[in-house]
Amino acid sequence: FRKGEYKNAFLHFEKSVKLQPRWTISLNNLAATYESKGDDNMAYEYYSKSVEAGNYYLAYENLAALTLELYGVEKAIEFLDEALVVFPNNAKLNYIAAISYYELEERVLAVFHAQKAYEFHPSSQNLYIYQAIRDGKDIGF
Image 1 (cartoon, one colour):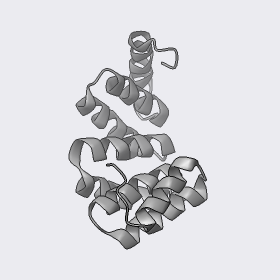
Image 2 (cartoon, one colour):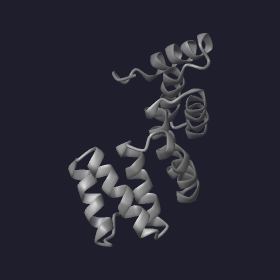
Image 3 (cartoon, one colour):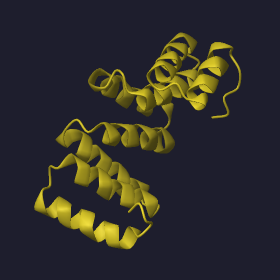
Image 4 (cartoon, one colour):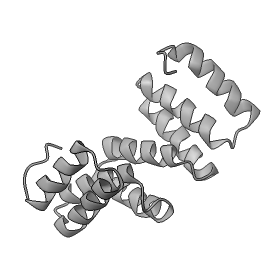
């Protein structure tokens, strides 16, 4: 998959899921191959299965991002409220929550999550989002 051999990766991930249908990593990886092929509905289904199967942080991150993209901020927030109970210190989940709450004009919650994202992963991107949300600027989403 990381080499860009998606067709081959897909076959292996699909076989892995057939052998162990509740292994969260294989479910997440199969979802990622669907997403790379542009099949967002199947990607959503398998990210959801991965989340249901266990607490694999990457599946939660991927499902949050895809939920935001496919279904908008309200549905993303609904999922993030649950996901952040499981992974309250996850920078990416807090980042997605920050931009989602900001889109809903829930500035206090947006600032809170943006600050958490930066605190847990002090990258320039997280700093930019935190400062822009804190200052009420356009974040381009």
